Structures are given as C-alpha cells and as structure tokens.
Length: 273
Image (tube, rainbow, N blue to C red; front, side, top):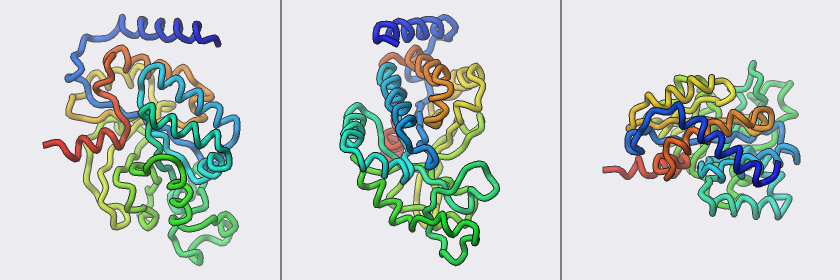
C-alpha cells in the first residue's frame, strides 16, 4: 500500500468512526493503554516485519505502545544492530519497551508454551520439560535489560501462585487479563513474588467484539484505565482490528491527552495528589 493510500485509508476510518461517536471532552474519557505481546514461539523475521508495521500504524494515529518482549525476541533483536536502533527510535517516539514472560506452572495444560525461564528449582520441573529449561529469571532479565530503554512494566503470566517466584522486583507495574471485563480497571497495589507492584487489566483485541469494545470505552468513567492487548501475530492476521481501534481513539481524542504507555500512565497515577 502506498503512503498516500494509507493516509486516505486512515482519514476514511477516522471519518467513518466519528460519524457514530458521541461527543466527549477529553477529560471525560478514560485513559487508554495498548500493550503488544511478542510471543516466545514466533521470534522470527516475519513477525519482526509485522511488529515494524504495527508500530508505524500506531505512530500514524499517535497511539503510544507498551511493547512486551520475551527473551527469545530480545535475543533476536540483540543479534542485529539495526533492530536495536529501531527500538531506540521507538522509545524516542513515545513507545515503551517492556517485558513478557510465559511462566512455567501457568502454561501447563494451556495452549501457551513455557519460554524456558523460571526460578522454580530445576528438580521440580517435570521430566518431559527439563530439556526446555533455558535459565533463571536473572538470565531472562539480563537479556531484556540489554535492550534500549528501561524495563518497568510487564505481563509475566503468573496465573499459578507457584510462578510468583519469577517476578523481578525491578518491574513495578503489572498487566494481566484477556476478557472484556478485564479492560476496565483502576491500579491495584499487590505483592507478586514478594515485590510491591501496581497492576491493571487489559482485554485481548482479537477476542473482543470491536463494537462492544468501543461501546465499553465510551461508557467507562474518566477515573479508570482502559487496557487493550494484542499479539504481533494477531496484527499479522487481522490488522484492520488494530487500525479500527487506533482510529477510534484518535477520533475521540485528537490531542492524545488520554493515552499513554503503561509506565507513563502509572507513573502519573502513583504521583497524583
């Protein structure tokens, strides 16, 4: 698609969405965050290209992203100076480089696959999973910390309490959730693995009806945070869902006053009087 065609497509989406919107002042809108999960099983050139396209789309609509990388993606990026430079530019543009982890116990019996990192004692890992072990969470965090920027937020997949040992205390903001009900939250102080964090929810864009998502956003009070998450592979399969959501947010809040990264929003929340 040419740049001119992309521009007219974006303008058309904004115009179409605006026609059905209720008028809102920016201060009446909830604050939105958008999180991108980069899965451990698809750290490859095709998914990198899709992520580059997704960031470009977000930039066109001025949507700041929190991009949650797994260790496998960090390895891929660190092996290529051009990719490292791209991350630095994304940070300059207002995006956040954050953390994603598929914890061991929480992935058992689920479609999600363990990423190989855990602070669980190795003799407690099931025999059939021993060969998948890649290291401790210190090893995981060393890869993530080598990327540009600062790691302060993440989705570290701890639905099983035994995975609490994996949480790094340097990550002070947590995100979780897939269901529509998880989209709306206020920051909740909790303890994960002995670490004090603020946690918010998000809904999976691929699982939510797009009309329902927009209606819920417009019905949400301004003192709440509205979180949405999408995988890079979701974008590769259904880019229109992402563009429609970005266009919707841009049409409601042209100045971007009610959008931010996870860390940016929660920094402001933590210091509010």
